[in-house]
Length: 135
Image 1 (cartoon, rainbow, N blue to C red):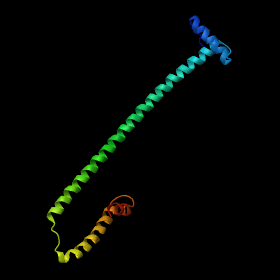
Image 2 (image 1 turned 90 degrees about the vertical axis):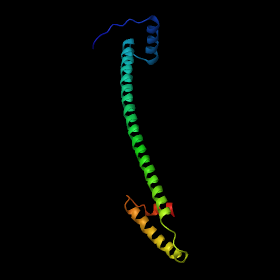
Image 3 (image 1 turned 60 degrees about the vertical axis):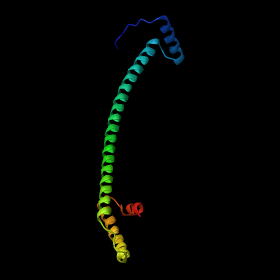
Image 4 (image 1 turned 180 degrees about the horizontal axis):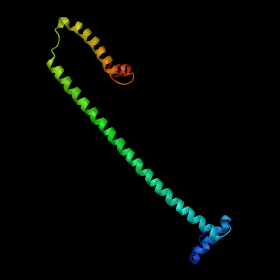
């Protein structure tokens, strides 16, 4: 074991001796070795924690970017549906009063087929979810 010479102030020497007695250690040298080891371990732990924090921050940043992209896609989809709805409502005439009930019945059937088609193109079972939301 390598030896090192230390010069300690009287106050520090007194505090070390008190700690040695309090902790029941064999000598001041044992206490100093333990203190040095604890300090080195603490410094290493802090470096590991900093590295972990940097990785976590990078991961959160990537997740935030992905959420932002999904939100932008959702907003674009809603804007497109809104524009399409306005075109359809503007350009498609209302049926005549005599054929209105039949047209509504046919539209309901086409709508159910549309919902089933939309749900089948999505992953998972979305037919119930879509009908619950829309109906």
